[in-house]
Structures are given as C-alpha cells and as structure tokens.
Length: 213
Image 1 (tube, rainbow, N blue to C red):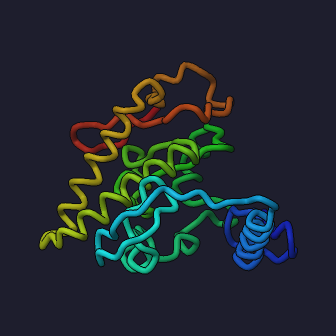
Image 2: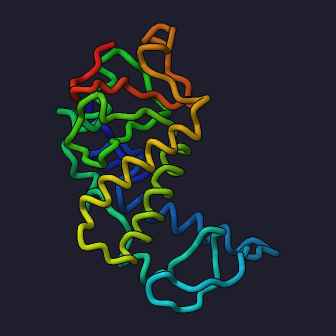
C-alpha cells in the first residue's frame, strides 16, 4: 500500500501523515499562530545552571537542566535517522510494529518500544507496547539520565548505560504497575484493539527465549 503526504501529495516512505518538509512547515505555522495570539505570555520556571557548561539559563520547562547548545550536542539519540530503519515491504510499518500486527493484535494508537533501544532487535521479550504519552515519558527519563551519565564522564559509558537503561525501564514499569499487562493475560480477543491506557509486555524467559502467546 502506497502512502501519500496529506499536504503536498508526494509519496511517503514512512508511516507518517506528512513528508519531512510539510511536517517542518506545519510546526512553523503552529508556532507562528501560537506566539502571535494577543496576550500570550511564555511561561517560565525560574533560573538554573546548565549541567554541562554551567551557564545560567531561564527554564522553559520545569525539569530543564541544559542550555540549548548543550542539549543539541549531548542529546541522546538511539538511532541517527529513525526513518531509515528497516521497514515492511510496503514501507508502512517498522519491523517491530509489523511483527505485533502479524500476531493478530490491533495497535492503532500505540507505539512499539525497544527495551534496548536497538530497532533491529525485534525479539518479543525486547518489545513493549504503550501509548505515545507513556513512550514520551519513558524517553524523557532515559534522556535526563543519559545527560547525567555523560556529565560524570564515565569511562565505561556503553556498559554503564546498558545497565542503567534496563533499570530505569524496569522502574518505570513498576511505577505504572496497575497499567502493565502481560500479553498472555489480556483476556480478550486479539481482534480487539489494545487499550491505549495500558502498557503491554511479553513475559521474559530466564533463558532469553521468546514467549509465544
């Protein structure tokens, strides 16, 4: 199935609604309309010091701890260009999403997250199905702790991050325990869409084998 940009009509190679150019233009238009509203005042959250360069900055977000330049330099990226990750033959889905759909589950409003942040590792015990909100919250936690790890200049950065990332992900699941459901325990027909309020995981086997449902 060929997909087309809803704005300019060009052919898409991703599952997004707009091409990269139209997506940028939409963001610019949204920003222009928002900041030009009468009486609009940008909310600030006091001052803090950048954890990397020490420069005093005005916080635009409650948890902001880096200046813009340091953020760009140290931003945690799991994949340089996620849109170039291998996808299904029609280009519509990532291989992880395609795998979940082939199992018979409908996930129209959910995201498939990789525990180890490696989009090529699509074993079931490495996948978590969750809403965009949960996905964004999890990545914010990972990104903040990545910045702190970089600040400490750890010599064994890769191994430390692998261990820390797993601990942070496990902690996030424990915090949201009421909404975490094993795929094997959903108690519903696979033909029904999964609920976006929940986080779905596959049971992890001791020997690292995939779980079948």
